[in-house]
Length: 563
Image (cartoon, rainbow, N blue to C red; front, side, top):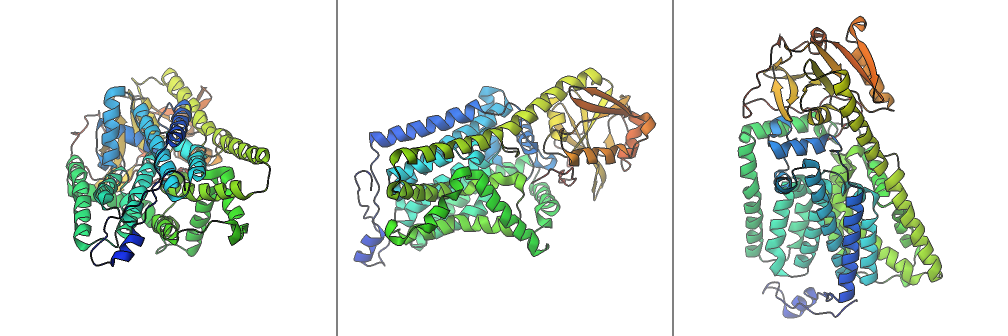
């Protein structure tokens, strides 16, 4: 065990015999030496530099734009941001944006800071659980994880949730071993984590309850009270900003009904759950790259080659990861939401670090060969992040940003905002949200319209604000332009063709500019795309706090969507 060990002999309850209390409370907590602080500084600095250098300069996907819009006006009814709201995340983003005056940079900086916090906690917990070499490996695996690297560079919530998961796991482990002083902080962290991503309460709540199963009943009630107060402290302000309980719950219900609720284990075939399980495995390989094969090496070792493990660590790890894995397998998961699995990055790094450390210590290979293997694996992970064709690579981010920049530059040249309405689509990339955010001077409408109990409505953006209207505000415009979807995708091309086929071909004009085809037509033809909207009038937008019925704007598919 690295460092000088000290024993925590605080009581866990008078009902436990003295000898048993002492055994339960043995905590070998290594003192942090200057060498450990140097390791943490190098890891944290490396994480900060690699994330900042490769940071995104545009809001990367649909959800990123939703979060940025929420910094300006919080209203989940019109997906600013989308339900369930992510209220604490939005508040943290607003504080940073007040200084930076750049929504994307503010949210990316929050991802970078969370990445730094996560690697610190992972190193410290690996040091507590195992030893210094394991801590180095665990920190390095997080640093070079292609998935963690990507999410540390974009304006999304997943890496922030990963930090809170790591911190809560560290605190809950101490509670599990008998440290009463961190029980209330653990409750507060769980409550705040639910404000970052409300699903954290479902995925991490069981770990919190499990960690205190030996605590006296009084302390359990105090911990639950602290959790409840923390939840209330952000939940009530969020409800007020959302237009009341009814409006918020309707928005949340529509989101569940239209996306995840359609393919749960209760209303879909077993093949769907099997496919999600394979998706989890694939995301694991994407998340850790070359390091993913370490468990295979660990399974080949004999018991004589390995250090006996505390069974409590195995049990604790199961409590940490099982709720999320069950949900992602049986309820909901899409590859485009692979960031969900970052919730489990901390325990994965701990065990991968342990197995890698054992391999390094027990292998008969020469030291130079070991370093060579480590270098090749590190280079492979860097290559996956930089060059892979998946959406979560630096290559894909730069490709999207180049396309977004070219569209942003070219469209005003071929279709001025004074007489043109943008018709855009519900796509993760180059969709309705990107069009409305990066071309705020245009009136941007989302195709198709949505059918609600109160009638047909259409989503409209102008000046980076969203409205759900019963009439298109287009009377003063003479034409519309279809906002181009990303190049190179057959699914996108086919979808655009189906939209164009609804319009008179003789009325359409196509202009190629900036590497994109801009299809334009007379404003009168919009009736064919939005047949349920009966009036076309010059736009007078409703009050920002009008009681519009919420809807899931992601109910329409262009082939690349997710929750």
